[in-house]
Length: 324
Ligand SMILES: Cc1cc2nc3c(=O)[nH]c(=O)nc-3n(C[C@H](O)[C@H](O)[C@H](O)COP(=O)(O)OP(=O)(O)OC[C@H]3O[C@@H](n4cnc5c(N)ncnc54)[C@H](O)[C@@H]3O)c2cc1C
Image (cartoon, rainbow, N blue to C red):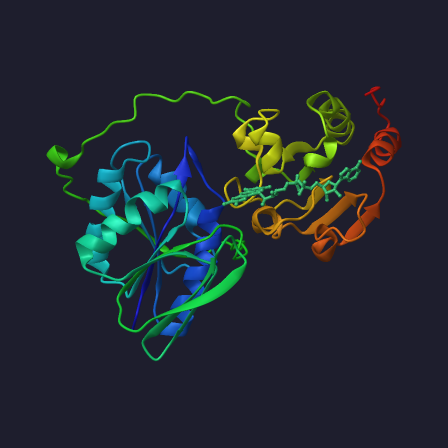
């Protein structure tokens, strides 16, 4: 029997959605390896988090009640302790800022092979096949890791979140954290420009690209955002120009998003952009170039000038287009 241990992600009092995607990936691995799925949560309001993680397909939930926010040294010690206690064949964490921080340290301490940023996982006959993307998502590769146990991080937006409630056993693990080895503390949070908007949580994104031409023309898209109740995001050039803050950027070096609707306006559909939004349920593109690659992945498309199309959309939603 080869068990799977997945480690949830949380930030400032909330479990992150990627935790529930991790449960799907973990359950698939556990089924392939004929093992149990263990979900773990470290620090914060662990009792509440454990109840949330008790979803369909989870066999056991483990809590480590130590500290409030993410801390590299506490997580590393806690996850190593969990792995030593449970002896799972697989330790799986999100390929998030946190997961990328502690997973390699955990793998090193446990002496296990480590593969990051998995977009697919297959396990058969003791070999783990990990699908990854390379060269800015231009190439898909598979990595065969012939000898476990394994440590893997999984990319957000690649597995659907588990929905149904479960009947897992919840237990607390008392980890004897070595305080001398905890070398940093979180003293507080400071919002970066752009406020606390998390485009990764939005259901409806209106995303603007270089087709907008000038910063003052952003008023047009902002009026559409107001009229529709959407959240504003963008491609990288808009952020590189300093027109929107970094937390609005969708893509390989920005945020991965999975909204119900993604309306891409004046965005060409470069692979680095698509890597961040291809998981949207419905993609709508507005572009004046009928050959723009964004139309290859769009469910609906308008070939037209955004300076005509966007005002018409604003009016359709009962708003007043600004003059730009
Ligand atoms: C390592 C690396 C990481 C990267 N990471 C990211 C990332 O995270 N996110 C990201 O977005 N990019 C990223 N990029 C950049 C990426 O390669 C593209 O350059 C970028 O996505 C292009 O942005 P765009 O589509 O807004 O601009 P363009 O490619 O210039 O496209 C503008 C589009 O607007 C259309 N257009 C122009 N005028 C109008 C009009 N009046 N009406 C309608 N349509 C119009 C054009 O036909 C064109 O298709 C990265 C690049 C590298 C090398």
